[in-house]
Length: 63
Image (tube, rainbow, N blue to C red; front, top):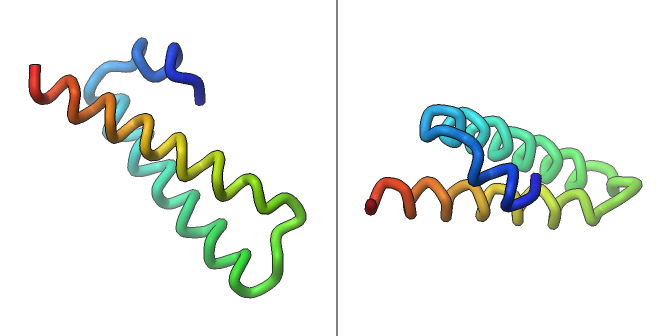
């Protein structure tokens, strides 16, 4: 998810997406621990998306 897409979301949508991506990251991490993922870069992409969503959410809550 790109930063431009993140900026267009409402606060409720940000919270929903953040929870969804955190669950997805936990699932990917567990799957990778059991058997290596075919594309381990997925972990990095999802982790960065979680960080983008969290940063945007905290930025909006401070305003």
